[in-house]
Length: 144
Image 1 (cartoon, rainbow, N blue to C red):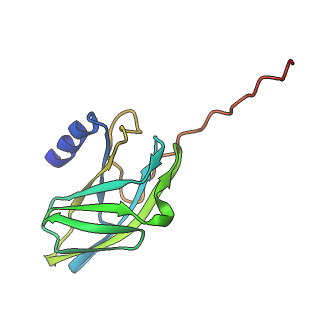
Image 2 (tube, rainbow, N blue to C red):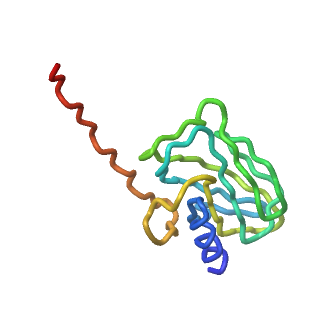
């Protein structure tokens, strides 16, 4: 819970924060499915993953993973998915590997984006938030 509180404090500094839980875990690994609501125009993104337990490696297919330390990784977009629009959902699954039967909570923050939910920041396993609805643009009639 302290981890979630710290991540929500970070949300006030231009990042979006939420906490996820593994959907599967086994001796030496776990699986997390993330659905992160996007509430800003992003031309490239970085997602910080902060774990409640030590993690040795990550397997993720839609981003490049960089290990900061045993409890933090940074995911950076691939060329094909760097542009994200307000109202989109950034969805990804990853496998984590470590020692023993690990089942960590995972703090997720997106650089350059405020908290989309307007409160809270915790999602239950498999839960998603509805995307932000875009308002239609009305073009005034040409009078000339």
